[in-house]
Image 1 (tube, rainbow, N blue to C red):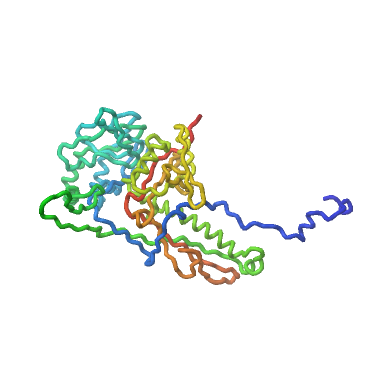
Image 2 (cartoon, helix red, strand yellow):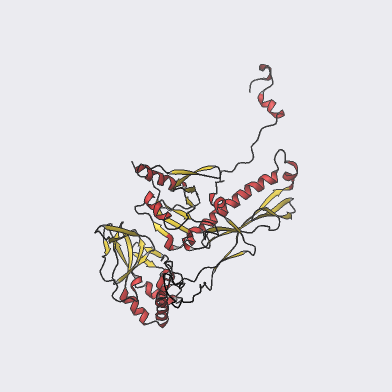
Length: 462
């Protein structure tokens, strides 16, 4: 520092002691746009539980079988997850499921290898441990048609059980190298022959398949149309599920602590308690959005129907993949994707010379595809293989879509569905406040949400 007599005026560092600085409010890097919370219609759940009543469904959906790897060459099915196969849905005997799982043996396949040929007899059932398979069929004009993609956890062949002389409806070919688990149908029939409970379960399942249903698998309603004269018109009724799903409100909580001396003395120009509370609520809302997507009990990524999940055709998210995803439901209101997935989609559009559109949402210009906004959401996870998912949703109770759940009017409410309750002052003169947010999310019908899975976001090397 230069000597005082070398200066002819007051030093700025000294003058600063008499000045009032201009300050910002406390900043927080973890705050995101939270588009999911903003775009979901929220239903006020007065009783704390939301019940979704649906029509009775006879056609059982297909889930994913889980596989565990105990070594390089030791890959096994987790027996309890065999209940994800429609034929075994709801079957309770773990010992029988373990015996069925033990019949599966590992088979390695190479890219391009044909697994089954269309028209040949079905003799085995398959579970995909790892890899991607293509379903191919010959079209009416002789061209090969792609009928879909199968990936990890998918199964095929089990639908032939109980049918006479079953044959493969299409060819299945390996798109990538992978691992399959294969079980002969004869082994399953042998186990079923020794288990009266399994035989009864299969008979009930096959009986349900013979019941009249609509194209969604719901119990049919008898309606006469196009008739003339005076025929006898059948009576009917609409049957309901006897055990509809109920959603209980979940909670995110924390205890905010502020010393009384800080709250008493350091409140100008900003209130310390209010700033602490503001940032705490931001963190709770961020966690709330993460839970709405990733919670295993009610989160959208885990509770979307497996029949509404598709894989990309080639890895990266192409315009064709996005069109497939949108076409799976009516009134798709929004698309939700990780920012890196959006960038990968734009790369694919650039390759084709396409320019995605945009749309205005609440004063913000949002990228869009086919007029449907694509909202960024960094809470959609990215796997170690640099793959992620893209979510498409129809929203609102009136459209039988996806709705957010909360309860308003709770004691000491600070924001809708969130309250702040004073818990007292401890002997160290520290005040405590319990901050709680109550929330959940419900899918009213299965096709309200669809997921494009196995989206490759890795940028290709130039």
